[in-house]
Image (cartoon, rainbow, N blue to C red; front, top):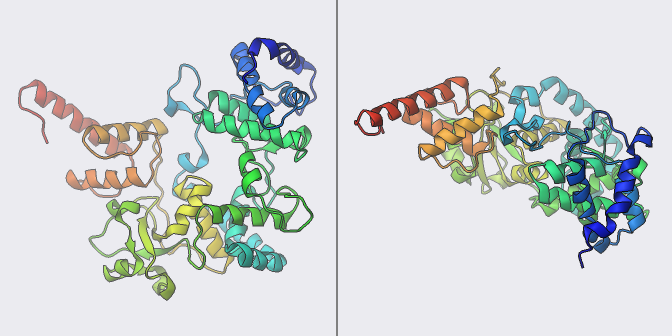
Length: 435
């Protein structure tokens, strides 16, 4: 039964009012307390859900003491600002060359190879029990926390509460916030040790609170699922999450390839997927003169070109999409896939990334809007140039006699604006649309 907010607001209001006297942990730098009454009401309305998860009132009040809105976090929808103004994640604001920094990848790969030897028995057991190879789970660890050297700076409750109140995915973060409160109640973490990313992810391999309860794995057999201090547990948990998301044992994430003349980036994405052997018959060859493994030839694969024509091309298999479900970004999944290959002994990309400029989120959003207005099947206007957007940019470029590079550039946006203005003028002059 939902408890009236008025009946329980006083204890929480008192707790929040004590923020000025809290120790440094609770008083995060650059935390802005605005819309205080609305935020306090929102927090109090969490109580019935938290109580249903077994959270006591004492734990609830202690966890929320001093919590304020942290407006420094990315992905917030602030009053008076458009969604495209939100500070974005690195996966969607950096160019491929910036995100897949060759020096950083080489450094992580060197560390990863040393860890592959150090944890050989653990990783072999993970692959036997769960089905995910050691280099892949090490690559997740490397991407998520640089093998434990990057420390999450936020108090999980505060970050999740801010995202649940002002973020773009409020319901998701509201659920995660309740699970985070449950973690405190169950003694999984304490307030002092509950550090997290801006999105509330925790531990060596960055698990959300709900994932801890559903996917964390006790590999070392001590009766605890310790994704913070136990490397075996953390790596097995990452593998278990990949398995739950559909990992296909015995298959790679994908392969760098060379496309034949006449095959362009406009074919990128799962809609054009076909068995690997069919791509080979069409003239797609693996980079560096290598052969595709026989056991992978019947696997469905699709063209992946995160930089459009300004970088390497890949044939991505289902395991690429599995990694992407860990973090919904093409660049994230490619980073993890490539790092896992390097840890396993592979080299760098054959084709280098070109130096291209990344349009702002607002610019990409305008490209998507204008393409959609012209009848192109843009899946979502979100300011992120994913596979769907890149492929449709290529289709537009081909249809208009432009160089096909599938990249959201200033030149492309200018052409879209110019075409729209010309059509508007033609309609106004009674000539009909220029299509």
